[in-house]
Amino acid sequence: MLGVLVFGLVGPVVVVAIYRFVPPPMTYLMIERMFEGHGYDRRWVPLSRISPELVRSVIGAEDARFCVHHGFDWNAMQKAMDANEAGKKLRGGSTISQQTAKNVFLWPHRDYVRKGLEAWFTVLIETIWGKPRIMEVYLNSIEWGPGVYGAEAAAQANFHTSAARLAPAQAARLAAIIPKPLSWKASRPGPYIQKRGGHIVAAAGTIRRDGLADCVLR
Image (tube, rainbow, N blue to C red; front, top):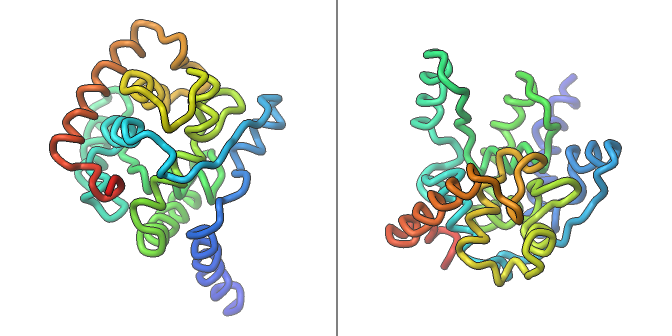
């Protein structure tokens, strides 16, 4: 029992330390999607080859306090709980760090065990990786369409350009579809994604003006 406990605590630390330098392999979600027939297109690129516009757009859309918090945005979590209790539309309170922990190390379906492990891995990547590496892994791992993973594959699939050359509007549209990448299209946006993309362009401008991405874009 003691050996299992030690392995359960030390094992994740070792894996996270390795992934500080080595690109994480296929995730549970990627394997699940392949069994569903979605294919697999992922092209790892360093953060230096991803447009700063995409970094700012993703921070503006998903986690405006990314550079401020230490993995958990307690204010956003409280607002999400308050909205849910009031019977309003469900809102998520997960940070980019939590999403990265979930996407890279865990399975996609929600349960209490996964949430507990997600918190543990979030602490580990915040401690061992730091913000630039978290953003790099996040942008190279998230789902951006059927069988499309990471910024480079998403940029090529949607706009026939590299992640490094994404324009502000293109970056905003990619950020806009993150919540529902199998349903929403960045290359052929409907009215909702067009409107959401416009809001994200404005949010990205605020992120730039206020230096809210400086922990990543040095």
